[in-house]
Amino acid sequence: MKAACMVSTESMPSSEPLLSVDGCVATLTLNRPAHRNRLESGDLRALLRHFERIDADTTIRVVKLTANTQGQPRPVFCAGYHIGSFDSETEDPSLFERVADALAALRPVTVCALNGSVYGGATDFVLACDLCIGLAGIEFRMPATALGLHYYPGGLQRYVARMGFAGAKRAFLTARPFTAEMLLRMGCLEQISEPSEFAGVVDGLVDEVSNLAPLAVQATKRSLNEIAAGQVDLAGMRARESLTAESRDFAEGRAAFQEKRRPRFTGA
Image (cartoon, rainbow, N blue to C red; front, side, top):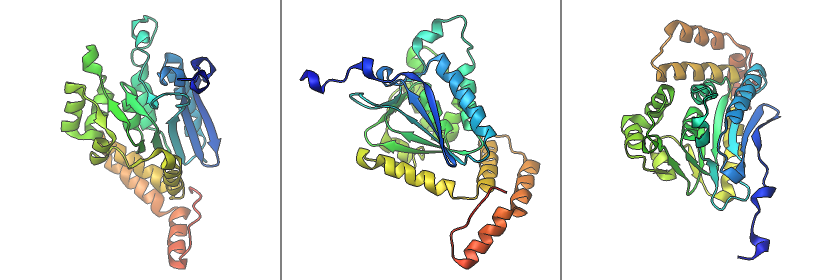
């Protein structure tokens, strides 16, 4: 291979996850492409800070989670937690689980733009998102038992909820990879997209979600998450139902339907 065609890893950006906000859409980007976007402890803490900012900004309706795959010979969304960090006595052993749980609990709808293969704990980040578009040709692999590790409870629960009991058993008890097509059949992907169309497909989904009534979407997301976790709160669900039924958004939605126009939701 000619030197001119080679990409130096030294020139690749490497930093904690980036947060950008454009209107009602926040984008979180994993940004260590030279290391296959592995997650270090500082990255996890940065994600928690970003989550706090997102939840505090009520104008944000959708969060897109993606990765910088610049210069990678085969795109990798995330290689998981930096395995060297397991040996550190100063690290919080529950940190990764808290980040995944916080991602799942975010107020806005989360869309994973899975633009590369994903491994280890990062697979739980994908499952923690509400919706996911997968790049054609990716793989998804959970090697915990191959490394001698029993996975944390929140992740196991999410695996069963999202992939089903049989899928979770296959993931953990064989450590075999899943293809994008397998994930699509299991309902873990909304769609598989070729590289040339990927950005447009993701943006289309984000646009669709961002134009729904945010109060109703966020209230419904919370109720669905409670049901999936076996923590059904009927009183809370009734309260959310009443809140949306009395909202200006519901009135606007009815009016737009009658007038055959696109509704203008405000989240109130």
